[in-house]
Structure formats: C-alpha cells, structure tokens
Length: 163
Image 1 (cartoon, helix red, strand yellow):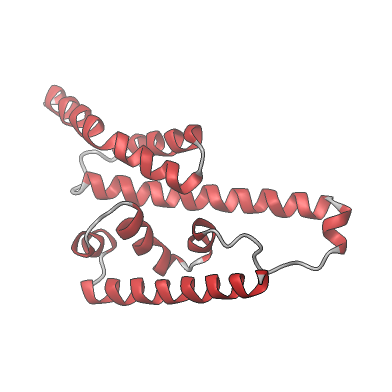
Image 2: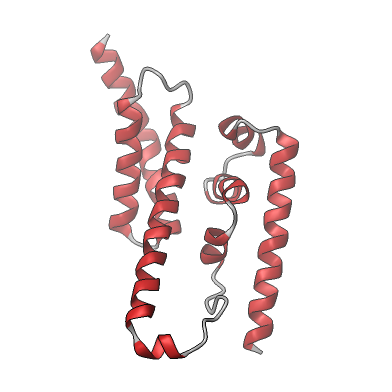
C-alpha cells in the first residue's frame, strides 16, 4: 500500500511538476521562487494525500494561493521601500505606473483572479476551473468576462496616462 502510494505520488510529480513550475515561473518572474512554490504545493499535497480527490487541481489552487502570498509579500516590501525613501514620500502616489498584465491580474479580487490564473495561465478548461473552485460553469464564465473587462479598463487607463 505504501509503495503504491509512493509510486503514484512519484508519477504525479513527474507528470505535473515541470508544467506547474513553469506556470509559477510566468507568474512570479523568478526561477527559484517558482520552484519553491511548486515544491511547497507538492509538500502540502503529500501531507493530505489520502484526503485529496483531485491532486492536480489541489496543486494548482495551492500554487495560486502561494503565488498570491508571494505577490502580497512583494507589495509589502515595495511599500516599505517607498516609505523609507524620502523622494517617494514627497511624490504623490500613482495608481499603477506599470501596466503589466501580471500586476493587473494580481490586483483583481480573489473571486476573479483565481479563475483567470487557472484558465489562462494554467490552460485549464472552464469545466475544470468550475470543479476546482466549486462554482458553476456559468459563474466562471461570468467571472472571466468581468475580470477581462476590469483588466481592459485598467490597461486603457494606464495607456491614457502614458500618452
């Protein structure tokens, strides 16, 4: 029993880890951090191995949460640096000077961000996103549409400010 469990985990790792780490890499823009997040997701899966019915989904949702935590940590660090720098303290805060899509996705509310990450960044079909999040397919489609509209408006504002 233990051998088959270990073999199944090993096969899952071989099949999913490279893609999961690559997905994380696109989100955090750093190889080492991406591998740490992917490894941590597998560690958390292993701790709950017998209770998880959808390991691949568990891995991606866990990684998405870890990426979000990473983004929050970076934002806290950025704020601390801004506060510590007199020049930044004098300059009025800008809404968002970098219109990169990754930063805009990071700013979305979680209800919209998770479907975007799973559908567009992890290439999961809407049906699978629906199962993983426990929400109806129609709700996922509506959330993806709302997220795209928010991102479009944000990008339009950013572009208007740079012209």
